[in-house]
Image (spheres, rainbow, N blue to C red):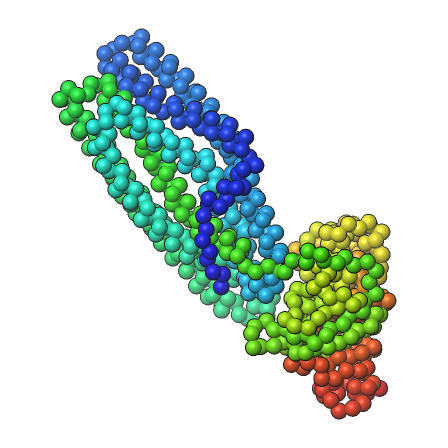
Length: 578
């Protein structure tokens, strides 16, 4: 569970600093826009008595001046909105960029505990909401607040006693808005959490629809979905109900305030302290307060919802990341591919060791198979070799160099992984094999030939420029696996890690993939995780793991010739000695 850290929009202010010139120009336009309001209120005070007196010439004069001021104000508003929109959107983009970069560096232990749907919602909906709040704060909330101050200052200048009576209602409105805002933020956090859970369920449901149909579990999934959307509806309804209550309450107070001012104004006119022209101007200014108050109320609610979103985004920043390279990290030159593990101990959780005092040496060019029951530590060993995780004690060496002393990027060029489930990104076939690395088409073709993939790629319309659909849905499992092998060997790694590379394939696909693997393995150090022992009988050495320790080691003929864990496993899979 992610723990909520403190979140504040003020922490985003440094991101605005590169756009000082645009903010300054937009600020000048904002000042012009705001300054026009008291001028328009004054003109309204001139216009109403002129209309009452039937002075048509004076009416035309005042209307002409008002139109000029309106035009100036709207031009300033256009400049304000366009000049300030850019920095606000840039901040939103930069925030999203930094969070995505942070996401790619998160510790694998943290990533495994996070929901993909929840993370997707945070980086899309939550980031959008934060961006909208930044934009509205700069482009709408700030000028509305300034308009409120300037127009009310003009009202004080007209009649400070009448303004004092008007001001008595302001604290009540402010308290109500604050109370409602706090409740809205709490409701918004719950609503956003519910949306994240709904997104997670949708991700699982869409990916698992074939399985659901295979087990005729549609009613069960439909019920789960309906439960989630009902919880989502309730959470959203609580937020909407709070907003629905706030607007009429604040609106009533605004109406009561205006009627009170009219009553007090009538008394001030009757006593001779205020003339009709001044009161007309005062009422016009008072009406000009309604719009900014409405905007500030609405924006405050959105700001509170944005606070909830920003807090959820900040939670990502506070998660542990992959340990960085050392200051004097070593770069790899020529890699022979010798792997050594010395007394390695590793655990994901305290007092639950996964690897215990494990020592192993793999010579350059050797093929070593890792076998054993689930949970024996085979996949964990791979994660240590790729430095996804770091051993609590002991050392892992490549050509005599401790992996902790190497640059992670250099290490992962020398050690390539072919996973059990081949994930490919959408794009062209060439892009799927290159996977963000600079490579010529000839280099990509050479890697595909090595992986026994060139034939089916060339047979496709478009060849290497053919599209790979989302999740590689337009390729068979065997074809995806050969693309994964091509992707792995493109950078000419010295070490190949094969994680059950053929376990999920039919016989024909397995044969094609195995030919690709045989070609890709030539001249490289290879570690193979295998549960189907028939696939590793030709390995130079077979390492039997159990409870994080090596319980037996040797080639197939040696291990099957004597009682032990390996022979037990072989007999269960109906494998006999040569």
